[in-house]
Amino acid sequence: MSQGPNGRLHTIFHDTRDITPFRDGYVLTPVRGLAGGLSEVLSSVLSGRDHARLSVVGNVPRLRMLSSKPTKAMHEAIFSSTEPDRLLAFGRMYPGWSGLCHVMAGLLAYKHGAYLRASELLQRGLTTRIDDDASQFSAIYLGQVVTRVEVAERIEVQVLFSEESVFLALSHCLREMGMPESALEAVVGLPPSLPSALARCTAALSLERHRDVVLWTEGLLNADDLSAALLLIRARSQRARGDFESAQVALREVLRRRKTSLVLRNDAMADRALLAVEQGKRTLTPRSKRPAPAPEPEMLEVIRKDAEMRRLWENDFRQLGGE
Image (cartoon, rainbow, N blue to C red; front, side, top):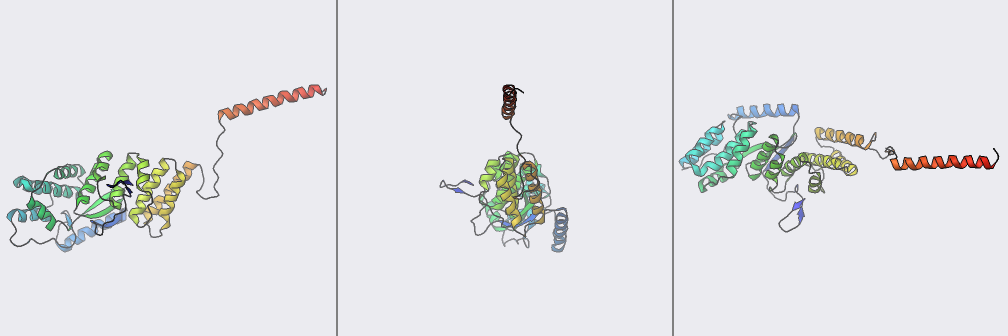
């Protein structure tokens, strides 16, 4: 949970918006990653687009009639270019468009896996003001641009061009660069949603802010694979805090929904095994018995003193009896 503007606590994973920029979430596996890559290449060939360009939902939006020269050049640079440099050159020619050019160039570099350059471009774009023409272009033509962002380990989500797509991509870049504190700062101000909650809790987990993770995910249920992945992060933070019973409850919730991804179910089973090892149990069933703790040194000393007093008493008793 986090503090709302009215002082109330609200969950960071429950999105109350009717329309969100998020589309499908994916749990990555080597097979699925290969199949997804081949599918993207085939769809690009069939649609006549290079798969190295920015992805769009459906067809590329057509230019409106009587569009200005900068609008036409920007449209061409975004939807036809495979290199960020073309967008950066356009930004130098038209300073009022520079911020938008850097953001789109950053998203393109992110798609290519150039995380260092993507983070630099996105941060510069976010801090550069754009003029009204660039803002109008963004509203008209960029709504169909979609970015696949990794919000947690092996968890990707498709995000339409928006505040979320830019900050989630930036957060992932910063995590890849070994900067979890900056990655957390990048997503802490986003509206509540499962993708932003995953990115936020992933960064917090790496910072060992386990109390925050548990607080932010309070009341979460397994409704889909994204929530199941978030429950796994919650269980790991609870285990790190030594709250094994609550961690077990979270893992049971991951395994409750039968359609949960097999990868996430396997992760939950592996985490249950780790719980069993840390608790000193063979299983996590109610019949399991925890081994008795080793007696403390003070208790051992008391037992030794009692044994010595009993031996002396028995010797005195034998002497009184003439033995």
